[in-house]
Image 1 (cartoon, rainbow over the protein chains, first blue to last red):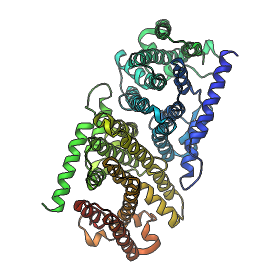
Image 2 (spheres, helix red, strand yellow):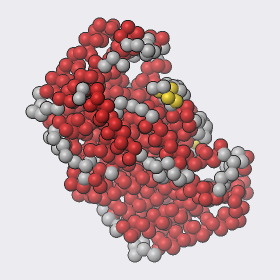
Image 3 (cartoon, rainbow over the protein chains, first blue to last red):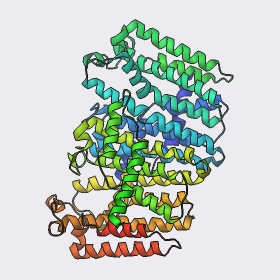
Image 4 (cartoon, chains in turn yellow, purple):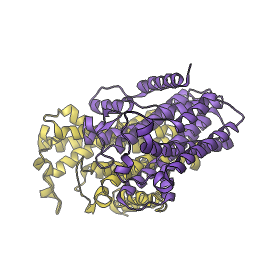
Length: 297
Length: 297
C-alpha cells in the first residue's frame, strides 16, 4: 500500500472513533450535539490523532486508553478552529469548502459548540480510566499534558498573540516563534507525548518526543507560510498570497522565502534525526513527519 | 459571628486560593493572563467553592485535593459568565457595576479568556493529584463529575436552550425546567457532589447530595425570577422587571408569582429536609442553603 492510502486508511479509522465517541443528536440540546458533530466530522486530516497513535505504536503501546485520547485531541483541535472562525476572530464563513460552524448554526451556537467541544475533550479523555483502569498513572500524566498544551500556556496563549499581531504593528521574530510554538506546535507536542506516555515510554523518551514534535510543528507552520507565498506556482486551484494581501507578518517577512524553505528543512531534518536516535522504529511515523513538512497543500 | 460575616470570611478565603492558583501576568500572553485574572477576581459571591467546601466539611473531609477543585469550579463558573456576556449572547457591557471582560479587553480576547479559563479549570483541578496523591480515585471521580456537569450534558446544554428560547416563541415548562436544571443547578450539583466525593462519602450519600443540590439550584433560579418581578417593592436600588420588558419566558410566565414563591419554598424545604436526613451535620451549610433561596438580592 502506498503512503497516501495508508494515511487515508488511518484517517478513516479515526473518523470511526470520533463518530462513536461524539454525543448522539437527541434531547433538548439536540442542536448543540448536532453542531458539535458537524464541527468535528465536516472534515480534517486527523493528523493529531494519527500522530498520537503512531507514536504510541513506536513505543510498542498496548492500551485501551489510546482511543479516548485520540478522540479528545481532535475535539480540542476542532473547538479551536470553530472559535478561530468566529466573526470577532478570523471571521471565516468557509473552511475546506464547507460553511463554518457559526455560519451554519449562528454565532451564539458557534461559541457554545466550541465551549462544549473543549469540555467534551476532557469528558472523553476521562473515559480512558474506565477503558484501561490499570493505566491510571499514565492517564493522569496524559491528562496533564493535554490540559497544559491546549490552554493559556499552550494553544490559547498562541492564539492570543496571533490576534494581537493583527492589531499591532511590529511583531518581533521572538514573538512570532512563540506564536508558532504555541498556536501550532503545542497540540502536536501533546499528541505525540501522550502517545508515548500511554505506551509507557520513560520521561527521557517523552522529552525527546516533545522535542521532535516541537520542531515538526514549527516546520509545519513555516511550510504553511511558504505554501501561501509559492502555492501559485507549485499547486493548482488553491487561493494563495493571502498573507501578503492581508499584510500579515509571517516567517517570510523576517527571513524571506529561500531561508524560510531552508528553515523548514533544517527543523524537519533535526526532528527526524532525533526521532531516529530512539531505540525504536516506526517507518510510517517517519514518513508522516516528512510528509507534514514537505506537503504541497 | 453572624451568618453574613461568616459567609464573607469564607469568600475571602476562596479569593486567597484563586489569587494563588491563577497564572501570573507575564510573558508574551500577559494580556490573556490579565484578562483571566480580571474575569475571576472582579467579583462574585464564591458560592460554588463555598458550597463545595461546606459539603466536604459535612462529611468530615480532610484532603489537600479540595482547594484545587474549589478554584477549578469558580474558574469554570467565571468562564461561563464571560461567554454569556459576549455580544452574540446576552451582550452585556456591565456585570456587578464593572465592565465585562469583552467590554474591557475586546471581543476576541473575551472569547479566548473564556476558553482559557475553562481549560484552566481542568489544569487546576489536575493539580489535586500532586497535592493529594493518596486520593487518586476520589480525584478521578471528581474530575468526571466536573466535566460532566460543566459540558454539553450540563451547563453548556442549558445555555444552548437559553439562547434558543430567546429566538423561539413558546418554550414549554418541561423545557424551562431542563434549562434551569442544566444552566443553573448542574454546577451547584457538581460543587456539592465533589465536596462529598473528596471527603470520602459513599455513592449513596453522593446521590443524596446531588438531589439536595438539584433542588436548591432550581429554587435559586426561580428565586431569581421572583426577585426580578418583585424586587421593586422589596429591595432598593436594583433594576428589576427586566424579564417582563424583554418578554423573557420565566417560571412566573407559567405559574404566576404566588405559586413561584411556593415552589421556591417547597424545593428549598425538600432539599434541606433531605440534607438533614443524613447522619452528618453542618449548620453553616444548612443556613447557606436557606440563604441562597430566600435572599433578597
